[in-house]
Image 1 (cartoon, protein in one colour):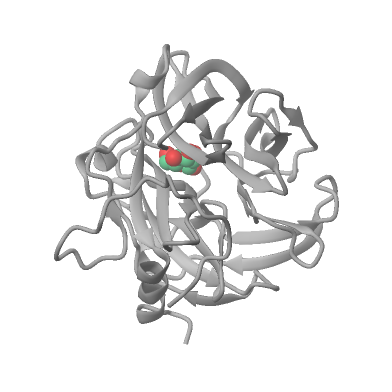
Image 2: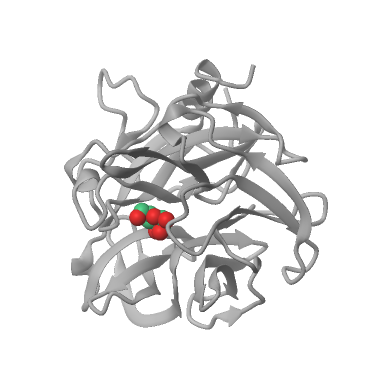
Length: 316
Ligand code: BMA
């Protein structure tokens, strides 16, 4: 039995695993949970991230507007399923992640510059006032994902260095910082290994601390004659040296199979950006972008996922 190390989230959304279902991750039956109808003038709302906040939940949502500008807005919810989005744009860019460290919420996102994409970093305590910090990676990178606590006294962030376009390659690296300003001590974490992720891999939600290591969900991309297909994989990283991969599943845990994942502005995309975990029950709610069009929700438990990773382990 694996144990989540972290807060209890008694109001975490949940549905039991359907009877007879054998895979480790199952979808919320009323998906998608956030669509363009949640925000006036949006074209699509997808790759978005949420956290417990005060008595409920808060989130940072990627909205592509009817101008096709890519912006980030905030949202609030009492049940983490029904969301009220705020029309005020907090930053330009895309694929936000949100991570609480010691009562401060850090936003990392893909910030657009005329020299390519960098990892924007901003912080807030209330989801209203935001302070932007130095970009964490310059030159170009995407998928900047912070660990939820300092490791050996330093902040740690995963990144995926890339080119200026729709990058046809990609490995996950991580880097360290004492102050969230200067980043260094780069380490390689993982490359594509499996068929389903052969083109590139990138970090997904904030890692979940367990007694067996850091549980990470990530996205992997395969290229077919129809273009890219994005799926979700999982691995366990060493607690103190998180660039060391202890276990890694050889197969995806979630892939675009449902209509809303296969049909949309960019077909065949499952892009996880958040995973909230309840340490009391071991339940995990995963939030992912579906077909670059809407936000969907899926469930697993720490045991379902850790057992699956170990049963399908490619680390021998
Ligand atoms: C990636 C990112 C994601 C997007 C995906 C599929 O490069 O831009 O925002 O979901 O492509 O289009």
